[in-house]
Amino acid sequence: RRAADDLDLGAGVGPRRGPGGVQRGAAQRLGLPPPRDEARSWLGPRVKVAEFLRRPEDLGSYVFNHSVLQVLLIENYLADEWRRHHGRLGVFYESLLAALLDSEDIGLSTKTLICRDILQKTSCKEYTDGEGESRIRSMVPALVRAMRGANASLASCATAALVNLASDRDGIKTLLMSENVLPLCAEQLRRKDDDLTLYTLLLLINLAKTAHHRAMVTKEGVVPLIVDILTSSYHNPRKHKILTEVASLIGHLCNDSHIRTMLAEDFPVVPCLLYINDQAAPNTKLKGKLLFALRQLCIGQHKLKIGQHVIPDALQQLARAKPVHGECASNAVLLLTMLAGIRSNAARMSRDGQLDSALERCGVQRNGRENPDHLFGQDFWEKVLALRERVLEQAVIDAG
Image 1 (cartoon, rainbow, N blue to C red):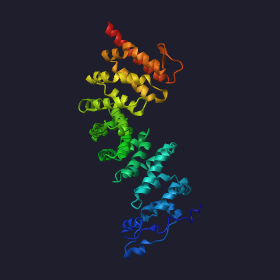
Image 2: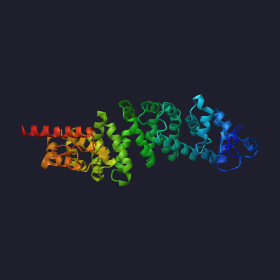
Image 3: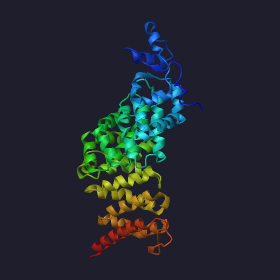
Image 4: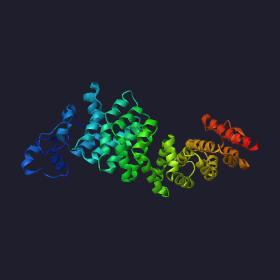
């Protein structure tokens, strides 16, 4: 590997001079010659990597050989050299990535590569050290700006990176709100690009886990957009990934009573979810999110309607539950517990010993007691006990 002092970023790379620099950068990207009267000023001196890294504030003054730049990014050469030059100064490499994302002379393919690199690092728990949040903060504004572009692939990668960066980090979620990310999310949902829609839904799920942020999501008009996705896709099995996240987002939004009432009463959400649930395979992420959303929508008359339709299926899911698919099992038990608040629903569960049979078949119960060898965990068994007590209470009331 050549030393940093000897390696340059490729032929024709150097500072822009005078007006028209962006056009000259575009010409170079397209492999076109610069205008004749500007050819001499365009072909400025080559810039070594070491010099470029010593003066990152001058990034906007350069055009780049994109092929060379991509190789240096992929091989982590820029990252290693950056840390060598700036590591002791507390200046994060992520600030360079942010500057590259904002640069007008960096092509879409390179920006997409940067977003995917960030996404890969978050998947490998790159930002879990003590400086992790500070490093993330240096990138968030640039990633939000990348979402504004017309290119769906770049917007998808930027959104996916933000999904991981914001996960379980309340400070980053607040920063995203201050960067006005919600109007961008709404606009991305309107574009109806499948990948972009999927990552936007995942980001909204991250943001909808606190009451204040849910209120902002609702104010931005996201609820009708979510319903539109649901009603236009519920019958399409190829949309199962999108429908999974739609169900999850609906479930989180329903933590606020006024949103829950609006979704249950003003939109055909319940019938669509029931239809999808009938088609969904057991022990899948889709099934788990559907059971969660249906539980959240169990209000008023819908508790009886949902119970009549879903109890046999939920019992079947419980009977086939596996410890490795704990979310499905837990959501089935929680939904049944909610439905058991109505006597007719509780009677339907206990009829012919259906509930006990399902618990025995999945292995959590043996001869009416907790199976000491089950692998579902104590928390799951406590949920089962709450369900059994609710059903028993309704049976006593009915007999009394």
